[in-house]
Image (cartoon, rainbow, N blue to C red; front, side, top):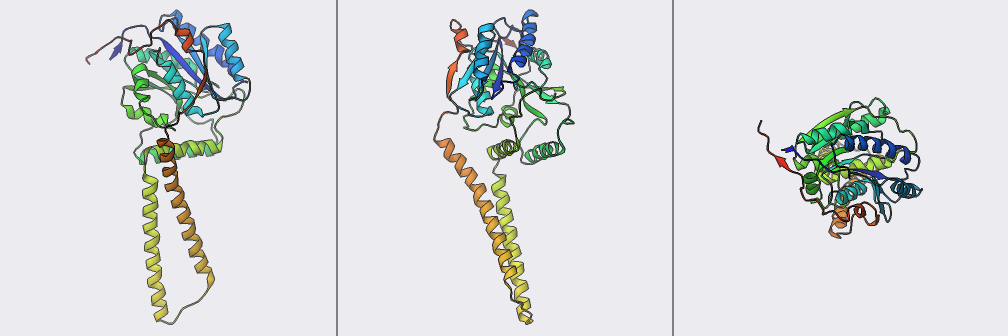
Length: 339
């Protein structure tokens, strides 16, 4: 499928306490978008959509000021903090009503925004998903680099298709976002869902830049939670691992029982509390781990069946700019290209 009409592009930028970087990032993104507009690669009414994920600084005030300065800047404001995945989903859901192409990128612009024109060019050639991928992790610490590689390896072993070294910097066409919105998980693992949708995709590589200001929004505990979301959203392998480990422990207990009987038959029995306590603590710890893993799945099921909204939008300045425009529904014209 090849794109043959001029698309409307929306760049979705999730924001949480981005006061130190927002102004500079907005100008960089606007410069790139204006070049795309002047070269007729995207429509003149393309937008930049900031999603304020319940920031506690003046992020929303800065978004509002930007909107007053230039109509290209628009925003969504959450009623509270819901997390980056929810911010991405909200931005894509709202933008998809009027947009043909959607690009998501973090507000710190550590992902190189200058490859956005190349992403649009790929879409013009019929690619529905264009991933921005880091070309190396040399700037990461040893721990972060090793843990990331281990996570991708483990997910691959679980049968989950991920794009290594890809964060949330990607281009999606209207029909991909429409398909993505059919996934109604309360805590969606977007990086794992998009490859499963099966649309034509490509990768563009870039060098990741150090953060210029502010703090990382992914400290260690959030990285661990993110990894758990990915694992538990796509596989029941942890429960099976507990089963296998439990069988192994039971097998070891049987071997120990045989050894004790043999020693007893030879009259060589040494009484002591240390071995008993070691066994009790080991089995008790294993049981707690097993219950915790199963409890994670039960808890997630409990959260899903309540069907509560994934986010609540308090203010929407994006949709207002398209009041007189009919929402798009696969508005782009395509034609089939035979290779």
